[in-house]
Length: 339
Ligand code: DAH
Image (cartoon, rainbow, N blue to C red):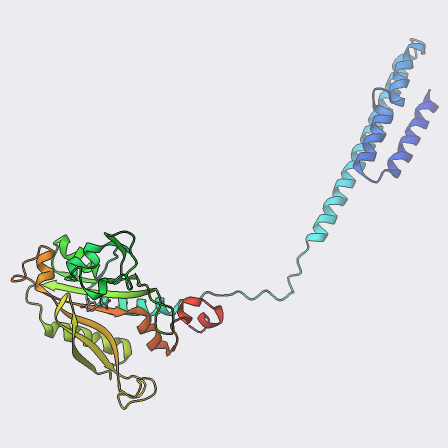
């Protein structure tokens, strides 16, 4: 019996040594320790052993079984360790390799220009207010003294959602909303996207940005308007910048004006940049029309105010000397990287 057990053990050892994967080990286990396994067969043969011999033989069988199990277990652990080692080796990171260059994002010229405009006006006590891009005709036009037969209402310029709702063509409707809120004084700046059904070219886009300004209080005069916008121009384009107000017409202001700044390239002498003019137009402005006050529920005898509207793209193009507005919308990384 002892020799039989020893030969089983030797055979197991041989087969384990030949096993290269855990599945093979399992086959060995089944072959020797399984229900129909060789060692199990020996156990089953115990009935033929003399009763006095049984405890001794039983012990031998058990020892063999334990020895086989221990061998199987140990080999299995070794195999698993080898697999782990292999995996780790495959995952090794060479820390001496040069790193990939990180692409750092850039702020869009429009964003930089807007932050600059906001910084200037917030510094003068203005609050930044947002209005809806989808707006009632009533706010976009009617309350701004733009009656139904006004050329600006022509379908050519305005995207209509239905006869009462439009994509706002200007940020001016935020003025009406602020005035209706009835909280005074008002010192607001309202930047945002506006829409007009224009063909795309170097100076036009169906969607662009404006920044609206509105001040309403008692005793606000045209002198306040001029002083404020002069400070704005100097802050934006430099201390030596001169301003010029030319009479103009906007339906919602009276009187109205356009403000030019002296060309910051040539200082006003006239150059290619200002098309020989020496001056560059940058915004529209004026004193809030009494009729607009009335439509927004404000007594024009008690309150006065001024308003202005700046094209944000225009500021960005001027500041960075970009000559085609389309560059601002294409988001070509090679262009944006410069800012
Ligand atoms: N909303 C005008 C436009 O889109 C710009 C403008 C002009 C706004 C004069 C104003 C203003 O508030 O007073 O052309």
